[in-house]
Amino acid sequence: MNWTDVPSDKFSAWLDVFRSSQEGINLKAKCPVCGSATLHRYFSSPHTPPADGTLGRCGRWEWCSSCRSFAHYSAAMPVWWHCDITVDEAILTPEPEALEQALIIASHNVAEPDGAVNDLPA
Image (cartoon, helix red, strand yellow):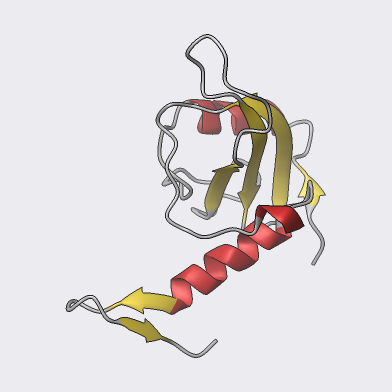
């Protein structure tokens, strides 16, 4: 299934969901497009030098894993941003497919209570 832009009639609600959250890559809110709780966001490394105490400008992705709606922007890196997955930023495109794949890989590498990593089959 292909990625699609957030429908124009849902875009305002989409912005509200993402603007009201300072969660990391996974949001708890439901997708305004399909109602699933599979929303994600990612901020790339800043691509312009920080100035005046800011963290610089970067790429910003917002997407739903269920309905595959997404938005991509240039944005200021928020101070609260944190991410627990590894992403090869050299392969990023406006569509969040590389980010979705990184999430899938991360979900299959489950840490055991003793700290060992269990590579689960796909």
